[in-house]
Amino acid sequence: MENSLTYEQAVSRLEEIVELLEKNEVPLDEALKLFEEGTKLTAFCSEKLREAKQKITEIEK
Image 1 (tube, rainbow, N blue to C red):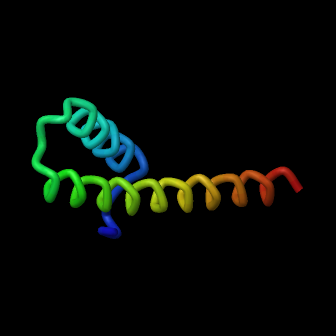
Image 2 (cartoon, rainbow, N blue to C red; image 1 turned 180 degrees about the vertical axis):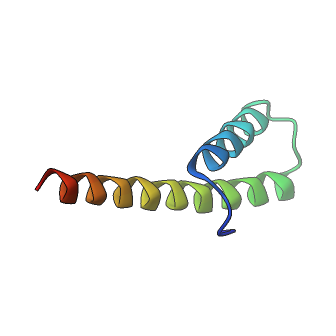
Image 3 (cartoon, one colour; image 1 turned 45 degrees about the vertical axis):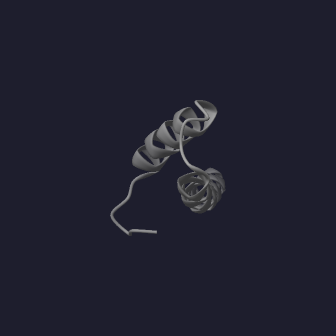
């Protein structure tokens, strides 16, 4: 995942991917690529949220 990608950009792209896949209009190969990209973006977002939660926990101490 690109280092300059923000959480908000990743979520926005995830929303685009979901919309494309829900339409069922993309060829199977493209759908698989979109699914793979979505999986990577989900992992990226989860990690960003984990980091934010850890920072909040440290601040609260």
